[in-house]
Length: 139
Image 1 (cartoon, rainbow, N blue to C red):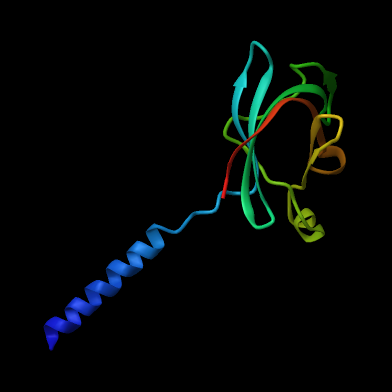
Image 2: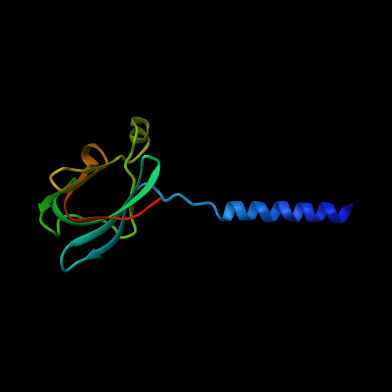
């Protein structure tokens, strides 16, 4: 009897490990900065979202048009600053905005992408021209 309980326990543990290890980990929603070419001023971002319940990953290559910081503003490819590896997660509700650091991300019909971060005197606004956009994966 003891051997059958041990086998059953081992089977349950192996099954649990398999199910938790093989789960499809959902990727975080938002815009991940994956690269920067300082010569061209091109930033590469991966936008992860779900559309109709399916994962959508979009690679964007963008160049800065304009940026406004609390203490200065500028235009051109060197005006914006993103950190490679950074994940920009747009805030979705007023409670999230009140709780911390709001982020608004918008892709516009004119082929631009904007990020607004912070609020009031700490707000940062960055506008980019989308040079290339492609779907790279979906589920």
